[in-house]
Length: 360
Ligand code: NAD
Ligand code: DAU
Image (cartoon, rainbow, N blue to C red; front, side, top):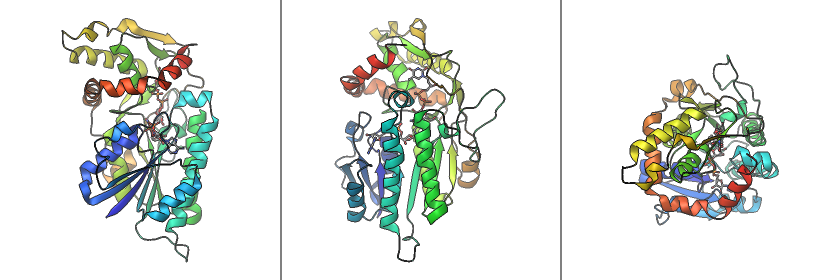
């Protein structure tokens, strides 16, 4: 039975990936989820798989070399899917240190532990082992007027402390292929949305605020563009890259779905209006009057847009979920999981929200 070590599996994309993998492979695989459970990690996301014999959760920090080496020593790991990271750009602007510690040094710990476990005396590796680094399109910087897309060959130009730290982890991963022929892949994905996303990110924040009649903060002029991808499509792409990708290669993953932030907000408001029944008291709260332009994010990248041509041509992956459908699925999920939202938005999140938006 193949064993996957998933880091950051209690977060947004990691938990969706674990669900996707169990839906696809059932009990023919085993998954070990290693997560430190920071503010962004939530075991509630995995309630429905936690009793499965082929699922194990280990609370560990990827910066803790001993703990990570022990996991490799005690388990015959075949695949590493490395999601664990500090993931929010706004937080990185306020507190860059933890981003370097987790995203750079933590990644180095993961690479070294896997290399140590998989390396044979002659410098080659045990058969059929793979390490995948989940990178981001933000490593490529920002597209400006007249630019086309990000390609795998686009030079790195990260701007925020978050993207600079992800770029460092990304380059270290590539260095392990170039230097040691350590079996890696890297995927650079655009903005994800879907169930279990923490409401510090644009889409769940807007859904949550709109349903409570709270202000909808739009940074700058609202015309920054992101390329949105439904999270299940990302999970599928990662699996396909690990199955069919050429070793040492990077694959861009994107939704062919560029939208300005203000367009996203308007679509959410219209979809909420459409989905809420007439007798739902929240219907009267959802309004475009809530849109509030606030101070811009420092160093705010203007546009991200991925050309997912290589992954389509080589591997056959393409984005399947249209935004219209994905946003309805997402909103429906939030309707059905009000308690989840209540639980993640009390305590620490509340403090964060007040601090983050007090000056905006
Ligand atoms: P998230 O913040 O929702 O989850 C991150 C997870 O990592 C949490 O469960 C957290 O507890 C865990 N974690 C953090 N520090 C850790 C540490 N030191 N040791 C162990 N676990 C730790 O993030 P996400 O949005 O699910 O993103 C997952 C990955 O995908 C990240 O690497 C991110 O850079 C990348 N990515 C995200 C997007 C997106 O749109 N969200 C797009 C492209 C790439
Ligand atoms: O592109 C991939 C990246 O997408 C990932 O690597 C990151 O982990 C992920 O957080 C995401 O980064 P962004 O900064 O693009 O996502 P965020 O949801 O924070 O913001 C999306 C856009 O919306 C961005 O232009 C900033 C804007 N925004 C965001 C928030 C939270 C607002 O206008 N208002 C807000 O309150």
